[in-house]
Image (tube, rainbow over the protein chains, first blue to last red):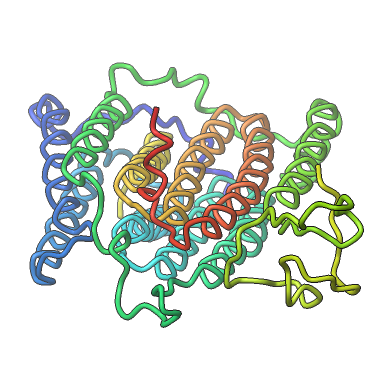
Length: 304
Length: 103
């Protein structure tokens, strides 16, 4: 796995000079085609067949782009052919997952496709010898953040004013906002970024790119090296990130708690004031009646 | 698959993920999906950072990604708390329900 990082990565000549000259235009054209496909496949009230056609167009653009890249960057014989296959698989899965996150009308499916994208990114991290970051990505994103997202999606299930669950998709899920403008902006940015990235004349010098990660101590894995680096060079930042996490936790509790007025907090002679509006969701088993009723078991929060 | 993997491959994947997240943030109207798309942009950035770190041969990229993950976790908890709060106010996740916040 170490060997492919050691290879001089930019000694690669394009197979045809003509193809090299046409490369930026091709990338731009592919981005335009993929943008049109994305506009078609973004959620809307159109017929399903049109959305399927859009998905096919975007898929085709991606395949042509990948084929072009394979041909364009085909160079010396690979030292580890298997790594290349892993890269293309993970990259395709990540991009497909990201595409479906954006285009799937149902939020739960978006979250699940996001998990696919996260797992594929973790695979890419493993290919880049960042095993600890891959594990952290799976644990933090797919384990913690995604579960929170799915939990909030379940919590915020849409109900009609009568209390009935909403049949079908809500309007704000089924219709996207300004799909043409957003796709134009986004795919212009993508075209420019990809043109810059694959522009061989502006590429980074080979000397920078040939170095591989060298363990600080012999016999160390990259995880041990990372830990040593973090605690030797980034100790203050590490402590500050812990502080940030604590602040975020306190902030989330303060934001999301339900403020109710306890009986002990009401000033004599004044009517009890309900601060939070009444909503059908209540996760506190002790505050079945919230507004104005003297409930001795009700939790009293101090008024800030 | 007779190609040699280069830095550009990883940068390309990162750029595509970032742009897809950007498009999703602009087009989707569900608050939760909008925040999912910001997480997608974080993914693209993390791939970029780790690829640069691997090809420069030091650990700064991975260390930076640790802090990106920390910020992403903090942002997710705060954003979801805000989403729950906003949902309680309007009983909808539509971002357009808060249109009057526009300056």
